[in-house]
Structures are given as C-alpha cells and as structure tokens.
Image (tube, rainbow, N blue to C red; front, side, top):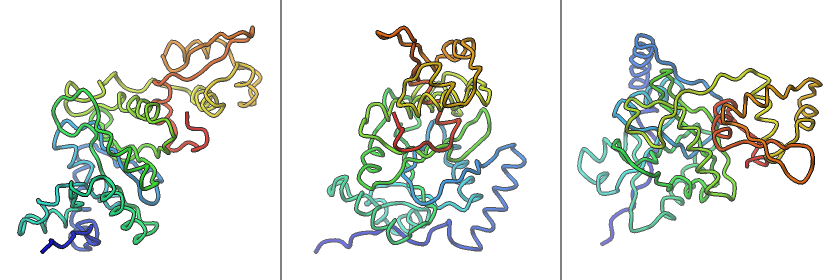
Length: 294
C-alpha cells in the first residue's frame, strides 16, 4: 500500500498567536541589543527565495528573526523521509518544512508549491533555498531555485543576512528572463557585496561592500539598464533630463567597475553595465521592470 502523500502544512510556527507573540518579543529584544535590523522592504505575495551567503547556523537564526518580525511565512525543502519520523517529522513540518520526494522529480515540487500558493493567495510566503547547499566552501551554486521559479512562475526574492551591516531580509525582487546564465551571474554579483559570518567560506567570493553612489550616479546605472543595456552619454542625459552629465561621472562609474565604454562604428561612445554593475543595481532598487531585465 502506497504511503499518503505529505502536503505542505498550512499552519506553522509563523501562524500561532501565542508562540509568535513570544518569538516577536524575543527577536525584537535580540535585534535591538545586538544592533541588527530586519529589512522592511515591500515584497508582497509568494516568491522563491535565495538565502545567501550561508556560512553559519546563525544565518538561519537571523533569517527566522526577520521573518517573525515582518510577519512573513518561511518554508524550506527537506527530504520527505525526515518528515515521516515520529515527533521529529511533525516538529519539522511545524517549523515550515516542505516534504520532498526525490522520486517525483522537480515537477512534483513545482506542483506542490503552485497548489499551495493558489490556496493562499496574496500571503507573504517565502520558499527558502540556499544555493550553496552547505555551510562549507563550494565552487558553484545549485540552481534548483531557478527551475522552481520558472516552473511556478514566481519571482525570485534575494534575501541576505549581512554580518557587516547587520541586516537581514529581502533586498530585491528579481524577475527571471530567458537567459539563465545572465540571470545567475547578475544575482551572484549582488551577493559578492554581502558579508557572511565567515566570508572565506562563501561563494561567490566576498569582494567588499557596495561602492557609495550618489542619487544621480545610481540613476545613471538604472537608465543604462532601462535602455536595453547600452546608451550614449546624450541618451543618458536626455532620459535623466539633465543637461549636465559630466564625462567625469561616467569615468568614475567605469573606475568602480560597474560601467564600461564600448566603441562601435559611430563616433559616439556607448556605455553599458558590467555584471558587477547589474549586481549593484539589485541593491540600489528593490525591484526593476521585468521587461527591462538584461
């Protein structure tokens, strides 16, 4: 006789009033004493959520704390066999475990998440995945989150636990394009600016904090991005409605490695974002128009 299929549990630790109230008090006090902050970004609905970098169990602690404080439900994948263990299985499901049967393949997980999202429309639900897959050193990401986002037609929420800025939460909603390689590279570039508890272990490699951009410089990056990835100085100035866009400003952005100049057959140089620039842009703006994703 086949075993009963385990569905995603509707009520979890993030729903119970008494437990949640106690946890809110605890995490509120902890974050205040430790100097941490839950990112109050406006990310509605459900999303496939990347949690990176993952170098310590403290990542889970601060991610859960931010979710509790911001009234967000978190779910994470785990082998179905774990969820069938008496007591432990029930506890894992109550914590938000999604029981995954590997024999059913990725489509089984996609169908399970789609059914759950349809059942709980407009709820703030984060399906959490750690692309590094382990707290140890790795040389590449697991990209299962990408295929799940494609299959479920959900956005990818980029979440962080940054031990330099002491911030935890989602900093960007990323809408995938049809270019998997470009999507992954852009997302990974954004995570190079986030410091894990043990930066030597994180992938991609931590390259230091975000450069400090003025409002105009940030708008230049966004303008180039919105112009299908390449624009002349005059085109950038026209879109910004700024008569004075200095070459020095563009040169500064080139020196920062976020912009590059391209010479074609015309006399006018064109500017385009580097992947590092795209990564910075994801930090500067919580969301970008899906039709302009590069």
